[in-house]
Length: 337
Image (cartoon, rainbow, N blue to C red; front, side, top):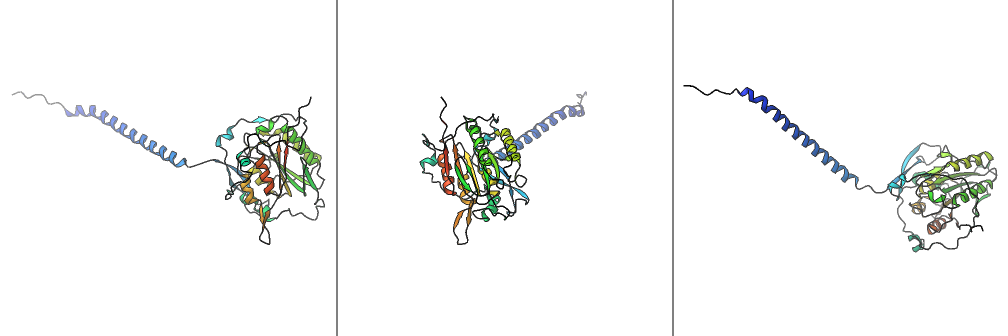
């Protein structure tokens, strides 16, 4: 009896092994991809709650001295994050122009602040100035000056607004809109005129702003500090003004925070448009000092200037009115025949 030949099973094993390995690889790959998809979904869900952006500013953590250790605080801002990507442009040569200190009308299409009569809804502080200005608040309405400074009682004049005192900070708009017409040239001329008008024992500091704060010579306090109005200081200031790159937003909050930190006798704030952050609300908290009798008063006067534009008039007027300052609108000079 002939039996059929028996196939050797050892020959089938090698043929089945690649199939099993291929199936295992597919399953492993599927698991890895599913894990990645789940991880990405969790990341997107977790990050969707972030709103707005912030500006970072070096502030004094000790609140006692400008020479203390610096730490970072997050500064709130309502500007969209893509504003920081706007194209930068270089400062043109200065053009002489004529400035006037009157404005014929505010705005053909007033801002929500103008419709509201300048009354803003008060809100809790978000920390724009925070600990950076606590030292200024404790100093009271005027900076404490040493007996070696006989110039106290003098003052400064900027676009026709006079402020008494010894030390002054000029916070100036350097956004791209300042390049329109004669705005930047007019600002530079009047700024240099104000500084040249100071006596030798008075001091100044300048901070420009767009999407962030830019102290003169790019030196933050305490490295950057007040300067006397010497020829050398004015030359350096003019060179720095020539080097400014103009950003695409109007966010003065961090610059005002730096100005308050320096504890000047007065601050001059100039802009040509609507302020896009919470400067008004923050000043209601951080530019106040509690007196011995329990009353609350303004710590440092802030004078505002609106240059060659009706936009933002209501906001700048509110800042001046609420901070013991004077609001000065400056109209566009008439065209020369």
